[in-house]
Image (tube, rainbow, N blue to C red):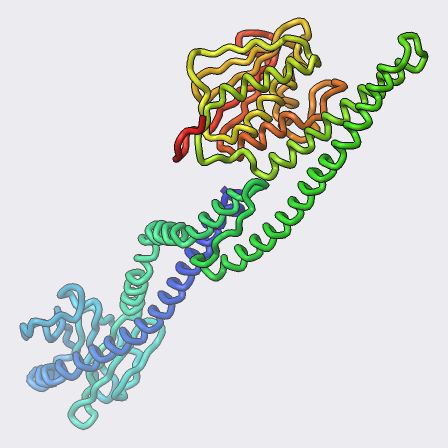
Length: 466
């Protein structure tokens, strides 16, 4: 969970916003409690004062009309409850929230409620409010300061009211925290939508697509990132173009001198006597020049593949391309007649450039012929209109090497004619065209061999080109 919150931007924002909301709500609840305490204090004081003034005439009348020498009288209930005025001074009719005492100028208790205690209140005999640790008092004087009615309210009652009011303010945040988290989460996810779209746009960029990202309609916070990415794409495109141009130009410029040197070497071999002691060395020179010529051809193919030649807006009949590539390899006499072509009666049709497709087929066949068992044929099968399979016998390729075979200059084993570029060229072309290259080893239901399955892109808009 800690790892999720540390790696997820959404979780971080939700967590921090939720913490801020809850903290601010708690602060607001604390401030509300202070205000409520003050307001309730004023309301309770007003109630004490009003109660004393309303009950003072009744208490005075009761004192004046009772017989002399009656002593202290204890009332069974609050004075105003007997008047049936329809108002309550507490949660019930027992009067435990408001206590009364009528005292004379000497401080003697003449009249009190039944729960006022056995001693006089601690409040002085002076009109107004007074408070100790347990009660809040209000004193009202009568008959020229000879009688005093004191009303007391327990402070615990006030604290309880303040606490309940504060809890009433605080309770919603406790109940609503899950809803707050969900609401913030959904809002953040919606707000981060442009980030996801920017990610998708960047993810589409690669060596075959270095077009600038459209930043006109994205938020200003992301526009700077998009602008930086576009600057990087421009620099990357420039670097890749320079690399492709160098490889292409170098390979192109080398073709003529290599071909001339190879022709001169072959002419020299034809003029040398069969028993010439330098004939073997001349043959090795011829072989080296042949490998150098093939390497220059691979570099040209690689530069063309990186330039995106595989894309096509039309679908093409590719059967003739397969036959032409197979025939060219047979005529080269490099591998003998070891290719078996099998078709299931359907034409191979796909939205890929025919020249680029020919490069793919040639590289797949050369790879199978170089690394496959020299005593067994290489099978080229057309399975459906968009699938081509090249299969060869031979040793198994380990999985850790299989996943790297489409990287440049990656190879399994050594072969004098291998450049390590063939499968990387095929992978680049087929990915640009929208297809897929799948490498399998060993062959299904067997313990050896290698399969290259070329899944060609589907048909696109446009007429077929024969």
